[in-house]
Image (cartoon, rainbow, N blue to C red; front, side, top):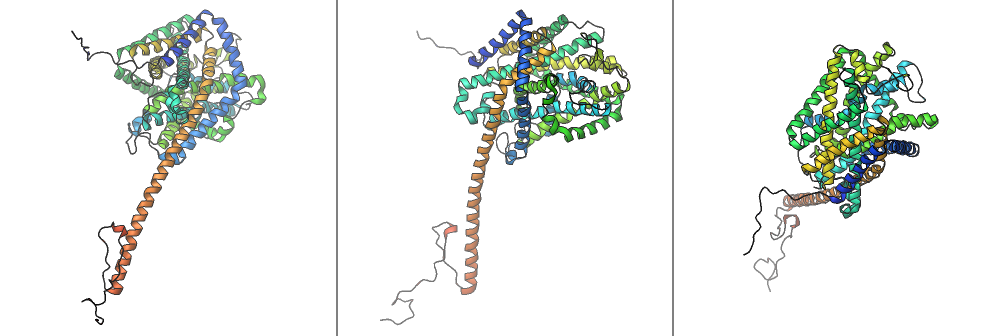
Length: 584
């Protein structure tokens, strides 16, 4: 008896897992977590040494590379490539302009802005960059300008490089949502082999450690907030418990499949951030903040070139230490986040032109970030200038009064009416950012681990969500804030090579397409001119000949109109009836 295979319509779809990407990336990251937990002190020492070597040897490389990425992004936006559509020609954008702007705004906001919104400008004011000296007004102005540098055009220039390459590959060429396909213009079919696997593994490393760094910052601030509210003491055990608990919530959000609920929660979080911003602006020194924002924008544009290429070469070890803690850390953090953010902005930009993509991605987050830092950071500097020491805390090791990044925002709330309520709102902001960042990060990583599949399986998304939380816990256990910063810098270094390739690939792809478009356009214009001029000349000659001779020129009917020509008067044969001459 023959047997038949009965296909169950509910049968699970074929697995899209890319084993050559998933297992090496997941295995190495899991190994890092286990080694860090077992040999915490040794890992902390190794990471400290690596950070010192990378900063001293490659700090200049990060600074030059980020500047080149920004210049490249602006050049592509204003060049002849700007009219190319990221999708089929003449396709309407997937999202209306206000909605698209709001989604870019949502991308620009996150745990980092909440964590550093008060702390960074205040830290640059209290402990200026080596070589920066002067009176308080100048130090305050320099502090705001330096903060704008770290969170403004340079960060989003990095994202433009990755996002544009991915958007072109996905929407214009119909490729899967995977980093490797962005390099197809220069690598060809080799992206399908081991080279493509290595590229996606590097992207996964950068994304996991970038998200873990953000989660670590968020947990540090949540623990400090709970201590500020008198709920619990901020200890390492509390931080580990918070990571475990919030990661569990993120895993539940993945398992529930309630994408609409998570999307609603994200939008509500954006609204809460906006409300908190307005409250601080209204209850604080509103006029000073608005004046300071305008003035700081001017200072930034006046000094952006000098700040961009400032490597603190004449400041010795103090300069290297400062760069490690601030500028180089930020460039590494943004580069490690680039696969995540780049893929997000690529997916929401279908139908946009290259010029719209570049200008929108650079300008909207820049405006949001500068407003945020002016409101929170400007308020903190204003408070510290009026009441010296009110925004500082004693260092647990040296006892010196310094800026505590974990508690700076809550100290600012203490100076405003309704401080405890704003502290609760800030904690909610950080926790929801934690959940949505973990959920979105695990989704993007899983797409890369599944060959660009935009609907990866549930089990692997849960795996990456838990692993991201594990990396954050391991980094905090191995050294806290310093380890988080070191991880961002180190994991970004190999991915810079991928980003250089992406910039070259998108330039080559846009150049080839523009060249082909120009060739087709010239061919069509030549054909149109030929037909138009030939027809016009024929009509002109016919008209004037009729006027001069009174005869109508004869044209042949068996040829196209553009090739008809006047035959002239027919010559009569001698001896015929039509001949008026003598007959034989």
